[in-house]
Image (tube, rainbow, N blue to C red; front, side, top):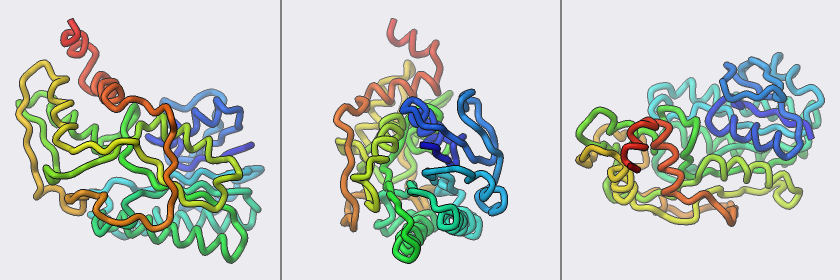
Length: 295
């Protein structure tokens, strides 16, 4: 099939584009800028999801849309509620409206497990509204969809807004590691490669018009995650917590709410979390420190 990946230059999108290519699909990446991760076999189109005319041209001969482009940084979303509405809601409606006209076979929409939380501020609200639009377009115009509610993603190519990356980088050239949130927080992490592989598997007709929850197998208290990162540094690091700066974030345990809709989709052979964290640590902190530690 021929797939368009909005946000295909980004963290999750670039991995999804890679996995689609491995599975034999043709891939068109639609994004604001070209990244270093784009392969020769990927077709890249520079464009904005708010530019309906350009988006319309990009959808020529497309079978499936992976709509991953969004304003996903909680801090930016909190500061820019109008921009959040434009990209996360209006951008999604543009995709849906053109999908209706182009008779796209299916839309795969990236959402979040936090849509049913009381926290998450404008980001959560925008994703919840976008889900409703996807479902309503399906009811009214017969557009097939799969809504993917992702847990806490981590791994290679993450940007500076990524939670686990923030934890690791907070300790670089400092005597402490800082977590912006409640010490009692619990997270389920899923490696971005596992998430991307799952995105390809759900192309099966079994997952048409479904809500799927893509998450890790095991819950980790944030304290244990911090201690894991602490052990990876050569230098002794103190662990600190900063709740005040976590405005709009999931300060409380994000699993204290009930899931509405959604079936868990968990791959059997997920990347071991500690192994995945070590890989990310090497990428962010540097090979030299890592090799010294092993020695």
